[in-house]
Image: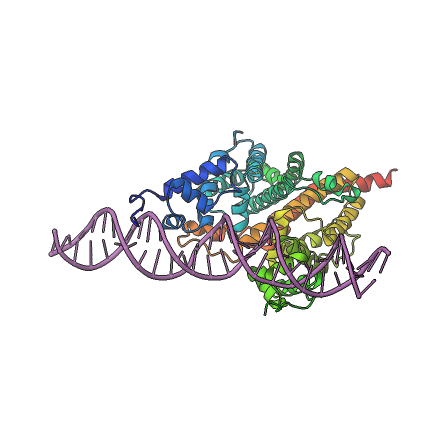
Length: 208
Length: 208
DNA sequence: GCTCATTCGCGTACGTGTACGCATGTCGTC
DNA sequence: GACGACATGCGTACACGTACGCGAATGAGC
């Protein structure tokens, strides 16, 4: 019976992404495997490749869907400092809680739908707060770098056991600067650095 | 002839690290392979594991050696702002130019000899500039996060071809905030945010 | 020199992502 | 229907990192 082939159309890009997303949301990213997905879908491993360019391509898609659900701040956007702080913190939490997201952000610039929507929204806010387009872009770049950088460091520290010998409690020392509180304080330094320009814009608005 | 075994002591941790380091310095990190190293050393792949815990362990060691050669600023450390800026930029360049380094910094906190030496040196400078130990640690954390984050983004953008369709020249937009110039400007925002505390310390020094 | 514990090189084997190509299913055109 | 173009499922095969355990070389204590 060589004809033990599954009916036509059993698998589709959408099905693959759904199953993968379910696993990642359940925190099973580390054990996400092409062979595993295939067996859950009841097809042969190589069949997935008709619908997904590669495992990384698949993960990109999964992460886009997860990001779409969680990036948007609840804070009103007329308080730009608060809005930006919340948006940054949401991305940080996302990176720390989802290893898959980390993987994606580290492999290439993220230009998925949700990531672009998020960038557009933040640029919008920054444009209203800062004197010109160029300042807004610089600010965005700085904030984004800091956020991703912090997320990476915090995530790499989580689930990491310090080497057997820990002279000077070095692990504690490192731990001390990758707490969420630390994130907020560092971000404040950044935003403080940006604020003078925002004040300038506010002043300019009064004297047109 | 089952006795086609290589003489005793042909391979050592040092040899393995040397060969691997040579390859990485030659920009051949992507094709760095246990089997490849073994064949260059003339031994069987599994022999390496007597001297190296894992491939990642090996890469940690290689990256430590490369970092040791390049982290130290040339600027005199009595101009703390300039010293810190150069130190940060050196780490950024290292991360961008050496994918292996990126790999290590993303996998776990880096506590190798060179990394600790670098941290100690920077903490020294920050302690002299800022009012107390706590401020220094916060500053270090913020600077480090920003630097690693920027390095990650810049590296991921390098060697990346934007998707076939590039609406609104989005690639350019992204490119605009991952230039070395941008790094410096963002860092300045951060240091500006820190400076008030430094000024406070300077004032305090005059009125003991 | 003998014995025994330790170190070292290696053969085998497993699970991973995925390139390649065959065979089968589906659909558009006559 | 018949036939050709294409889409899809899958079997085979490769290179990768590395767990496990065997046998040989080395060194320590007598």
